[in-house]
Image (tube, rainbow over all chains, first blue to last red; front, top):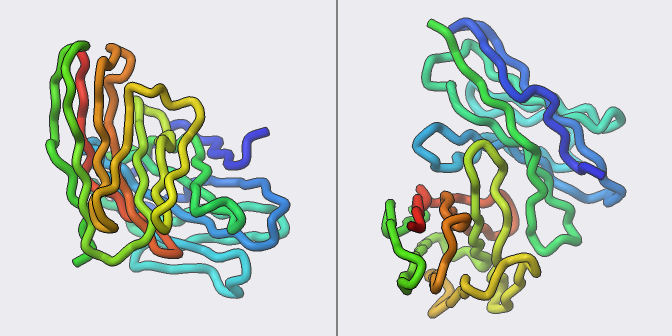
Length: 115
Length: 110
């Protein structure tokens, strides 16, 4: 069974609009972490934001925020005021703390920002 | 210094060649990783060096072999590769939190 599901293969968004990228996960481990990464066409995988399973507040990093709904097992990434440079592939990933630091990856969402 | 460096950036090799990919980090991280990534797919974990112990993805063929000369270096030795091994190879490191990735090596096997 898939542990990380990203249901949006691709999205087109107008510049300056907010974007929500969906991610749902499945785990029976009470201790886990959720990550979002951005991968531009250049190939480098860029860490954006992290949410721990015990964190009481949603994580935020600049224009990025993570909408963490633990009961629904969702960890959506919200990008406020999108910019052309946000066009990239976005991956959601999870680490279960019994897993020797290994990440489980979603299939990714290709985001294109239109001018 | 929060950087992971990888060399070379691009590599073209024949199926009979032997080559190596290099990865270095100076963040004092105790875990380092090699990933293979095909276009439009998520990365696939190949190897993990964590606290001087190697973990291997059992599906990785023996024509790939990792080497960890010290805690800041992780090499990937390539021998007798196949065209289907053409991909982006990413190195990453971590302590207990997020993994930091290098820029990757784009490998083409002819």
